[in-house]
Length: 444
Image (tube, rainbow, N blue to C red; front, side, top):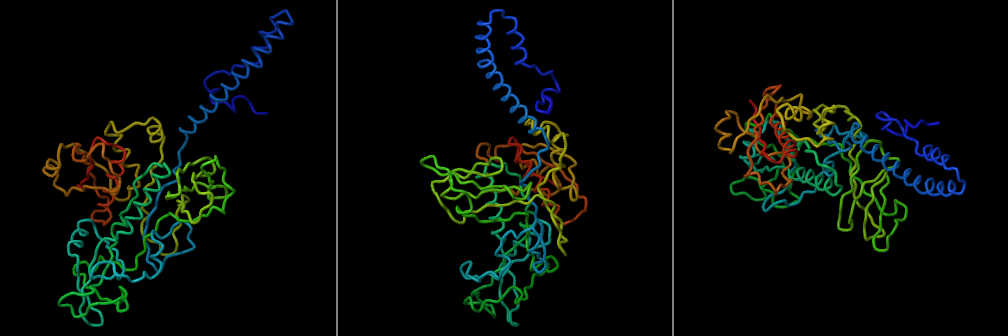
């Protein structure tokens, strides 16, 4: 038999009070049996039921508060990495292509006026070198021993994938944590010139278009940093589902509620439903996601599974895993429960070093300035401004009107090409947590 303490957390702080026994004892004091019977009806069936109902509500409140203080294991942490396309392991159920179409030869279509898509490259270089690479914009190459022109531009589809993920988080009312896009920001699409004055070889139609490997591109001083056939992966698996996959929805006379059951799904993984014009509301409940719609049946609605079990490194998956996980600690859980914000230097530094950046950079100082001019005058190192959450708008406190919080970092491996991006990741996440300052970073 379960003890009272097993069902009541408040037993840790106070002794239980048995209202039923107390009422029975008081009833014994009434000598007139008729009055005792009447009082029993009133007290036991009336007041007693009210007391038991109130106790159940307090128990539910206690349990909810207790569970909020318990370890809150995130179900929506995002992991990214890169592999050579030939090394991609389709049996690995923890990492999936950011863009599924990358696994196939992309159909060669005219992407821009006078240009055709050739392929995608990865630039293994720091952000300063990225800016130099982007400023060149066009390179020359050889195709069948004849000169041709190629153009490069950032691969927009990966940025679009992250922005789409953000919208899905918003649709599901799940708090957004900055996704580390250090890898995704280094992909560039390569286009061939359809017609260029002075070129010895031009591409005038799709049938003439070669693959990226067929063109010997002269990247100049960037030859050692350009990688081809690189595939970005993350722990997000997109799936589709139909109305026939579930039990008939319950209708309230006007709308239908469809249930996306989580029973049998991998424990600990996060699931999100992508909103569309037919979905009116998405509601997460215990063991299921409820989708409100005017449609009684539907087809090919989309859901995202965010895998949370330890990431599996298949053969030749050698690149570092970049995550937005936070180190768990009692202080972090307590601070989040109390809704505390950045008030002290130690709290600021704690929040930064809880992020998954420990192998790259460490925070060593901070400063507050009134303007970017003051920041540039005070800091000798280049200032890293702008984060990885470009799609998150804050119209209530425009960036231009805020004072500037300068976060100072030291590299653990000087010159490593991801260090600057790690700083950008930090200022993006800290920017989500505060609204009174505009965050920038410098590497000392």
